[in-house]
Length: 466
Image (cartoon, rainbow, N blue to C red; front, side, top):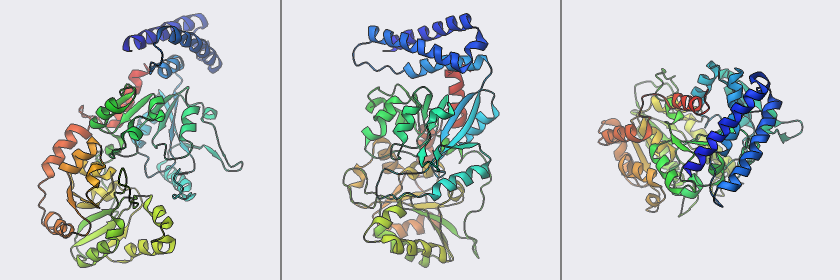
């Protein structure tokens, strides 16, 4: 397969050189000429594929090579490549540093694509405020953005309208229009950076959907995930890479965190409670959340330790929607519960950017999945609340490694939660600290000392010959 792809690459480049010489650089750099040349190349290479490739073979380089004709000619004409970052939700967007690097470069012209956050799960009701929050966030950050939705006509705009050369996907197929956007971007370089660490044992959904198969580049969040992609994906991870995880860049960029914790009359330890949204009882994949068991207990612990510890309630963003739809809770009871966390002197509810909240905290209690890696990476103790004995079987290989070796654990109704507060948080006894550091260095951070954003930026320039 590699031999076929190498031949394909050489044919693409030689044909480009021929066209470039025939039409001259300036004329070939015109969009109409590029489209015409790409059409010629498409026909020729499709014929090549039909003649040379075994039936059913995976032809991974096709999108890259076809688009490289445009990329090379844009570069010759000193025209920057249009880069579109899809951004339906500010809470999961983790590519700001890559955006800034591109913004300062001559090779790229980045812009954010904003559109309504519509989840495929019927229990997650449409939240129109997310769109406004994204716009406010980008205005505050002074980042360029375009709307991918026409509110007057109540319809999505095609990505083709914006003529992107590179499209970054940061969300998954859990949102509406992801497949549609990917189809509209089929003539562009497409890149996927996960919005979090995927640790459940749903390997097929995580590594081997058509979404992953069609993506030009998959930039996985860990070295273990890259290995899992090579094992579980139908193309054996041929389009997969590990260059670091951009979300972790924000923890290690050296910025001075803003004080986001509620002011106290005396110095106290800071503990985050981060319950997952999966309150349903699913014996296979989800069903992690201990929220129902711990809802009252965590408030009682906050009251008991009010003079020594302050607590931040940081639930998964989807938990509120799940509770609103749950017959045991409903919207009124859920709202009242969330408000309780705002009223107590040593408690608070947090739904904003959590980077500074994490950096200024001392420990975490919860069952949020991605936080298992994120919080361990910044070398802080995490007590994972275990609903029942099926939970340990719901992780993939990366999740198992973190769950079994880097986290403290406790059943939701056990005394171990309070022991964790007393022994680890208040007394500072943290025997898992060295294991966290070793695992982070070996599996979560890039080995070359650069940030993930810098590595992806350099990778694209190298791959696209910019």
